[in-house]
Length: 166
Image (cartoon, rainbow, N blue to C red; front, side, top):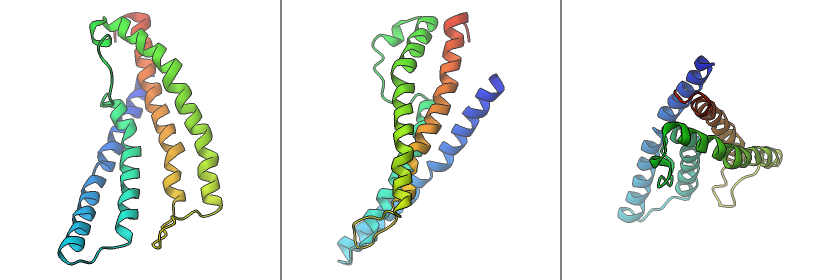
């Protein structure tokens, strides 16, 4: 079982490190647009749409990586004062009540949302009109990846809650 959990962690860590490089492309495009707009008085139509989509990929696909490394915002007022076992019990209960149901709904509703977008080959309303369907596929895709990484964390916390040790 631990080998499977480690494989999930490695996959999440690898994809997070690869996707994190999108920030470099995003930064270059934003700086390019600022230079074109301010110094050459020649703004582009496509830059907003492209940077928005790159940010969507970056933000969504890094969510499982942030979960793996516990980088999400958390209120640790009570959590940090608990023993490891009590912290694990609190995490298990929190995952069961909040995390898994929320992501199940996002995944369940995200699939028809993305499928509808693919079915009509949805595009943006701008004159550049880039496709949106592949970006909307990120919604159920990210929910699935978060469920996968969350399951790995949940199982480890469950083991700590039951046995009292990692």
